[in-house]
Every structure is written in C-alpha cells, then in structure tokens.
Image 1 (cartoon, rainbow, N blue to C red):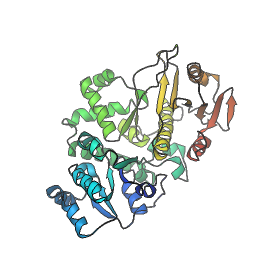
Image 2 (cartoon, rainbow, N blue to C red):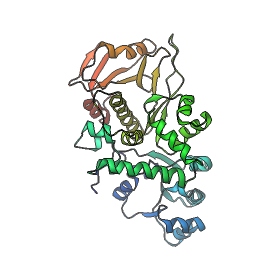
Image 3 (tube, rainbow, N blue to C red):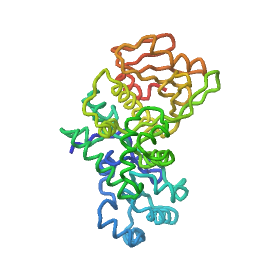
Image 4 (cartoon, rainbow, N blue to C red):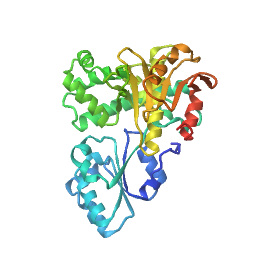
Length: 380
C-alpha cells in the first residue's frame, strides 16, 4: 500500500522523552512507526502469541533488555495489556529506557495508569488523513467516505467502511468487554451517529435508543475513551446573552458516521451535507491543534436563543462553517452576536465561495484556501 507522509512526526518528539501515541484503529499508527522508525524493537500485542507470552510474564521485556540493550522499544496496542505499564515505568525510571507506546483506547490506561506515566511520557494523537497530507483532493469523496487511510487508499471505500464498523463493534467493545450488552450499545451507536455535529440531549438519545439516560452518558464517555468521538464543550460568555451548557458530539470520521447512519449517498443540498462539511472542518482544526503541540482551546458558542458560531479557538478566533457557495448577510448573524459579547482577534466564515472576501470585520474564505493557510501556520 502507498505510504503518505503524515503531518505528525514522532522522531523529533522521541528525542526528548518516551511517547504515548493514541489514535483510533487503522489511522496509520503502525505505518507511521514503520516509516519513521525502521528497525526498532517492536512488541505487537495484536499478535496472539506475543500477547499470551507477555501476559504470562510481563517482566520478559525487562529480561530481554538486560540481555540486549535497545535504544527504543515499541509496544503496539498497549491497552490490551495494561499490566505492562508497570514494567515500562520501572524501565524508564531505573534504566532511562525510551519507549513508544501505541493504543487505540485510553480507557483501561486512564483508569489505572494515568498518574504512573505523568511526566514520563508525552501523549500524541494520530488522526485520519488531513487535507494537507493528500494531493488529489475530492471534497465529495472526503465528505461521503471520510479520511481513514485504508478507506482513502482503496478503490472500494464503501466495503472498507463496512468492515471497519463491524470490526469496531466486535473488537473494541465486545473483545474488551467495555459494554456488557452489545445489543443496547449497537442501538445507541446508530442513534448517536444521527446526532453527529449536534448538541447532545442525553434523555432524547436514551428514549430513541431504548437505553437508560445514565447508560447513554456512560456510552458517550466510552466513545471518547476509545477515541471514536469528541464532545466539544460550549464557550461560556459573561455578556447579556446566555450560552447553552450542553456539548456537541463529533465522530472522528465522516465515513464511519455515514456507515453507521446507513447513508450511501450525500446530496449537495441536504442537511447531511452541511453536517459532513462542518465535521470535516472540525477534524482539520482538531488535528492541526494536536499536531502543533496540543495547546490551546477549541469550543463552540451557542445562545439559548439560537445564535451560534461553530468553533471558537483560544477564546478569540471565531470560525463559522457554511456549506453554501455564496455567503450573504444571513450567514453573519451568529458571528455578529458573538462579537457583541467578547473581543475577537479574527472572524472567519469558511465556505465553498469561489474567492476570499471581507464583510466588515468578517473574513470569508474558500475552504481550500483556509485549510492551506491553516496548515502553513498563517492564521494565528
């Protein structure tokens, strides 16, 4: 399979300390490691024999390193055997060993070993492809099928997505026993997919999925822990307009969302198209912030009367996403309302407009120009 160079580099980060590399299944963690760290010692816990051997004797890693010193040791899918974290901790503290740990779920690690690795390893996140990594960009394909590497690189993205959704339910949920009732979780997951890019009302989702509201809250936490989605929190302002308190949930990939929704075609003038366009821009912003050090804040803003701005970066950069091909005055209401509540450094509307324009203090950017400037580091 063709390798596409990623915007995240792990080599430079490893020069300073060990790394915990987190990302959903099949975002390319193993490919990135093979490309940037060829020849490194790797323990792959997806291999049954490797898993069983280390499960029976975790100290085997320490014993192997005592026999033959390695500059770097990689443990792939570390969440499958959290007990290895004790050995990792010991080897870092007493021997200065450098590790690269990868995982597609932070749940088990967060429960027992967050404090163990605090300050000893830097956490990085790998996302699906971003616009700056792919040359032959097709918005229609990106919005319909997403940017998971094996999906983007295949000639049959629909089949690849069907396999991915099935693997996720079977491997991440059932195999790790994260949910005892897979039928309830499956109903919830389909309902949650229809809530993508929307504010979440837990009671409403619970009613539709026939699952208790308390369980629905736990399931959303589960999706975050297994890196399948993000609950974006609202920005609270102190002005006259009262902001909402409920978060918006975004799945990590448009293709996965549409597979769960059963959506096989995306009409350009549908609400689903607008939601997919917004989700795509969310992924780009989140990946950019993660890859540039993970600093800063990303929120949305919405009042109880309905005025809304899709994304607010670091509290003073507003980004509204519109799938329209011609932004007009009607599209400026949310931005103007937010500007009346707080000082904004820059105000962007990202759309499918053919050229850049300025309407007062609001900058209208064609989405490709905005993304190129974003990844060039020219926006803030």
